[in-house]
Structure formats: structure tokens, C-alpha cells
Image 1 (tube, rainbow over the protein chains, first blue to last red):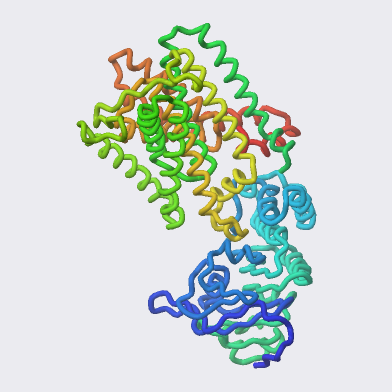
Image 2 (cartoon, helix red, strand yellow):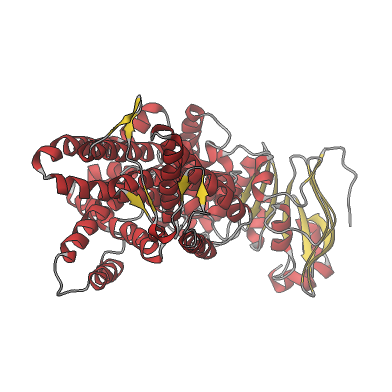
Length: 244
Length: 345
């Protein structure tokens, strides 16, 4: 495992993080570090604990033990809205949108959280432009296709201008083209913010990845570049199998 | 959204308010005094319906006990007016008591993250507790200041008086003006509120609470806010009600009234403000008309109407009418209208 010492600022750190459901150790003693402006992918087979780990980071679950520290602040027991208020943009695995509201209103809701009303309006228009959602901005989001809904949610993350972005399966259910566009967008976001991306799609990870963390049975199996992981026997056994 | 946009989105609100003002000044000339007195009660109930339309239709909070704040307002007004010897400050007391109680109850419910279904159960239970509690307050031992609470017989409510002269009471036709003005102002206030940032965030929380938290909004605070405001508006309805009827009894807190409030909003349409107001007037008059005959049972008819609406007009009257008009318009107008719909009417 090549964990280089890095002089960049640590912005997310977990120490001995554990989340147990009854006897099941979904996340077990995880020490994780993310540096500023880093783009990190989390991979692992189903039930490896990626999503549980993600929910502990975003305050949707309160860990059984251990600590989560975001930019020096202990957020282990913080509420979701408090973590978001630090400037963290979050996209969940199941699309979470304001279903009965228009695309415009959805994005505005994100922009208006931090900006005054004039800036929020221009930011909303800019974001809609950037996400190619101009044709459907007046539609309610429950009329949109799955891929479009994913884009609206990414738009909401972007419109808040976060410095840390947490994405749980952003490319799930997207077509090949949409996936490629999403990869471009993630690289673009990465110029401004650090990211943690939980993903299943290996093609997608190859498009964006730098550093990859492999989860297995609630623990971190290894952390390395995608190439190194593809060659690693243990990683292939637990996850990649023939697809690598 | 800047001021101009808010005003534009509120255009339908002003149209309905204008219709209300015309009705307010025309009705006493066209209708008999008996009808006017009856109308005052209907107006009071429609303010209650408006408050539930706000908290349920826009806030997404199914408060099964909205009538508790209505009754609390009526009792607080009556007791305060007896003690103060005047009605002006008693109105303020009524609104504050109901809002403060809602804030306290809401604090435990929302910050305790009680789920939607249980919220309905809790608010209904609180209403029924008031019903049982106040029924047991007969006799001279139960009084607040000079006011006897009166048990199941209730208390006679002092009529409204002019703010500058406590011995000059308003006549029923004047109470009608006051009630109508209160309804219109409450309606315009709600129409404005749902188009502010606060109101739009509340609507977003109704659509998806987790998403609003992921954006950094503290949904508990917003829910508490809209719940408290709606309770204050319900209390205004309560003040008008005990003025229209002349007394307030614990029966206001019974299950029938709690359910009736929900029916008004279902029939009128959730997500609109004018719908539930119209539905209240409509059903109030239907009930009165049915009271004059003995062929059909009143509650049976109400039940049939409710089933009819839930099955055939699930969105309620106002949204269905709006949809119907929208479809008949040219597509170019379509998108503009749809944007406003659901936030403004």
C-alpha cells in the first residue's frame, strides 16, 4: 500500500470509524484521509460498506464509534444540514429531488441557501446553462428521465459552490454518453473542490480516477491508483474478477 | 426572487382578494341579517380551513388537530376579553396563546423527528385532550381571573368592541365586515408567505425533506415556523367564530370538527389557498340546507361527498379547475401558467 506523505491540507479524516447494525459490522475501524483538491473514488462489492461509510460522512447515520473530522471540525454527531452548511455538496445514491417543483426551483433552492436573491437567480441560470437543462427548466422534475434527474441533482450540488463534494453513484442508470459527460463535469468540479465518489461502474472510474480506495467487508482493503488496483490480486479476488 | 416577481406570482391572490372585497361590501345590501350572521360563522371556519391549507398544503404537515388552535384561540379570546373588559387586546392574546402552544408542541414533535403519521395522531390526541379537559371544568372552582370556564356549557363570548371605546359593541353586520376583512387579510398574507423564500423552502421540504437538509436547510426550524404561523391564523378564525356564535363550548374540540377541517382541504384541494376557503363555504351551506330537511342524514351526505372527492377528484376542486383551464390555453401560455400554479393561488 503506497500511502505517500502529503503536504496538502487534510480536509476529511475518519478515525476508527465503525457503524454496526446489531451484529453486522457494516463499517469497521476505518481510518480514512482525504486531502484538499483530491478526487477519490470508493469502490467495493455490494455490502462492502461504501454507502454506509458515505452516510456516516454526510450525517445520515450516526456512527457506533469513532470520529469524523471535516476541515478540523468534529462532525461525528452533526446533523446533515449542519454538514451541508460547512460547504459540503452531497448527492445521494437514490436521486433526491423536490419532485413536484420545477427544475428552476430545484436549482434555485440550492443557490438561494447561501447567496442573496439577485446572485441566486443568476447562479441558477448559469447552472442550468452549464447542465444543458435549458429546454426543461420549467418542467417539474418528476416529468424528467432518470438521467436528466441525475443531472438536476448534480446541478443542485454545483449551484451551492461547495469546496467538498460527496457523490454516491453519480453515473447510476446513465447512458454511455451521459456517463462520459458526468465524468467531464466531475473533473471540472475537481478544479474547485475535493471529491469523494462512490461508484460501481469501472469504466466510469477509469475516466475520472486518480486515487481509489477499495472497501471490503466494512474495512479498507487497499488504497492506490486504478492501474495498481487492477493488477492487485487481492482486489481482483474481492471485486474486479473477470471484469478487470 | 425579487419584489416584482413575488407580486407577479401573487396576481391570482389579488384577484380573489378583490372579489372578496366586492362581496364584503355588497353582501349586507343583498342579503338578510340572518344570512349575514350565518355567513360570519362560515367565514370563521374558512379562516380555519385556510390555516390548514397553509400548514398541510404548503408545509406538508398533516395536522389533524388544527381545530385545537382554533378552539384555543376562541377560549383565550373569551377569557381575556372578560378579564380585560375589552376585545382589542384579547384578540392579540388569542393569537399569541395559540401560536405559543403550537411552538411548544411543534418543538417536541419536529425536533424529536416524529414521523408524519404519528404527527397526525399526536395533534388529534391533543385536540381530544382539550375536549375532555375543558368539559370537566364546570363549577365555580374553575376560573381564570373573573372568567368561569364553564365546563361543557362553555362560556359566553363578549362581542367585539371598537378599539377606542370598550362600551361600544359591534352589531352583527359590523362583525361581518371585520370577519370578511380578517379573512381577506389572512388570505393575502398566506398568498404572500408561500411566495417568499421561507414559503418556497417549506414547499421544498414538503417535496423532499432529506434533499432540503442535504442543501443545508434545517427542516425542523422551517416546519416549526409554518406550524406556528398557521396556528396563529387558526386562532383568528377562533376569535371570529365565538363572535359569530356568541359563545364557545368544548364541542369545538371534538372529533367531528377535527375531521371536518381535513375534509374542507381535501375537497378544496391541497396546494391551493382559495380552494379550501371555497370548499368551506360550499359545504357549510350544503350542511345548512340539509339541516332543513329530514330525508337524508347530514353526516351520510358529507361522507358520500368525501368519498366522491377522494376517488374521483383526488386533487380537489381548485387544482382540477386550474388544470382544466390550463389545458384549454395555447401551449405558449402553458409553461408560464404551470410555473405559477401550485405556489400562488
